Image 1 (cartoon, rainbow, N blue to C red):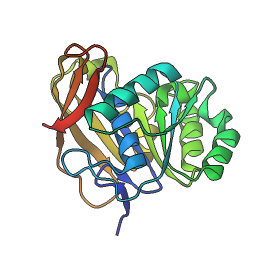
Image 2 (tube, helix red, strand yellow):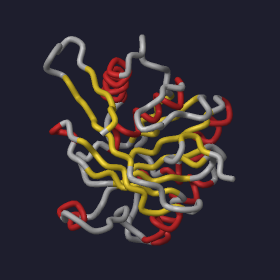
Image 3 (cartoon, rainbow, N blue to C red):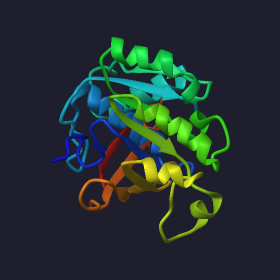
Length: 231
């Protein structure tokens, strides 16, 4: 029987991929998952961590100040008294070249979840190259903890209204992800977004998960909030 960090999103000990077009809310979801795993927070739709522990967020996209701001917003939106302490590392080198330090940090700090945001930047090479894709995936798979990677889609996939999409780049990204979820939505309009499992190595594909992402920085500009509700 498969163990999960959060059922059915994150099977324990393997790499899951959350992918979608820019602005779909991927990073918000990843940060909410990070908060949940660190604190035990129950997210909507039964997305409750089965184990809690330390989280390491490997960030290629923004900076520490913006990361802390979004964690603060999400913590307030979910009623936490203060933001949890999530380990953060701003990354500039390809993941495969940074593994010695990352692996040492994970062991020394008993990290149970690593988030890579994003896989395209962490690859550091040609995303369509099987060898470059294999290098970053082998680096991730060498970590004994659970991994969640954020990925993008092609421009044509981003613009289409129906049909199945896949993570942008080599087919290795699709093949090596053990549980791949596409996110469909548009965070700018506070939408209902769908998480659709496109691939799994564990039993059957799960039903879509519908969430509503709220980002409110207008009601009280001094204390903005963000959160997830059942869609």
